[in-house]
Image 1 (tube, each protein chain N blue to C red):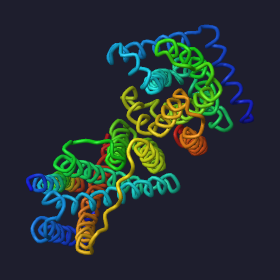
Image 2: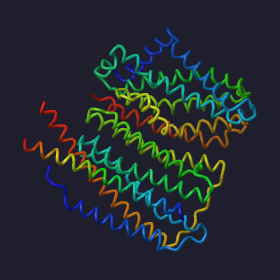
Image 3: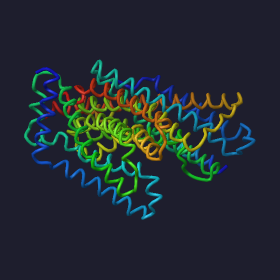
Image 4: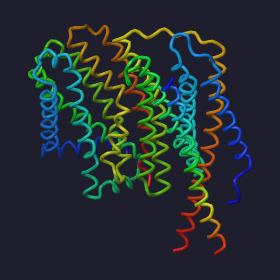
Length: 225
Length: 39
Length: 223
């Protein structure tokens, strides 16, 4: 099966499951909103303060939600014994990675289209007029997160303590995209034209490209029998 | 000065512990190996 | 399996000797720093420890690549040994850095780029050892930790750069002080001492791993 059609098949299948049940999407969204609430309660109703750190809170919520949903990336296959089937199917195992990656990115982005406006309401942010740069930053950050996240999720799939191993491996790896996303988001929200934020955007692009190439290339080793 | 001394002590004690621990495990493993060899 | 090579014994002896000399010089024979006083003596071990940790990290990367290319378990044991000893050195770098920071800056921790990257490097090392600890099958353990080792190595320079940018947003970088040749020589001496200690300990760990692997194989056949 050619790589392209394999990727498309996986994305389509996962998307169908998701659209029918909407299970992941709803719980992810709700969880992310809860994280924002918890932080707001913990920090206090100091709106100017919350507004200053809103970008950080938003991306922390996205990352926590993303990590939770990552562990479920391969769960559908696991339950039905499908991972063996996917692996044994002839053709490039990279198709599994790319398919899962696309699915994760789409799911997270879909959640963010609601989460960003929600935090705008909670923290009194002006996202409407910065919509385009914010969308670009969201896409770059989500790609960065999903590229390494999907990879480590596959790597830790068969390990005993994977619930703690996945965050342990993932979080140090996420420091560059996290810093990039948070700083560029905050700069854009503060009315700073993409001047200063450009450095962070470049960091995210470099990170995304580097790890997309490395993870795709090395993926077959991670899921070998 | 105390901070410096604590630092040097920390280095010596952790490296020393590591060396001792490795040696102990090696002695155990080597004796296990030799007992098996003569079985 | 044979006896351990006598070279390793000599290596240990040389390491110990150099460590003694280096520490004596750093603690007693070098004059205290004009500006920072006695605390500066920590730098004579903090900097070499950091260099040794980076060497260790690089060796883990090399071992991981070698393993994936050749699938030789010796490469895997080499990488694992370097990681086990390396984690000690990175922890010591962090500890001596913090011990230096407290009297100098007044606080145990600042989000200084080098300190922060050292902490994250420790996290990467720990992740590498954790994935080994939780793997049962030696082949998978070797493969997965090799992947983690390679990815981790690629991550660290990017992490360092991003933390530097993050900090320069809030604080201009401190201008580097010029280093006297006396300081440089002491650094070199202690760096050599630490490298010898590292090599000795890693060699012993690798031998331990080899014996344990041999014991495991024999157990498998005995049943």
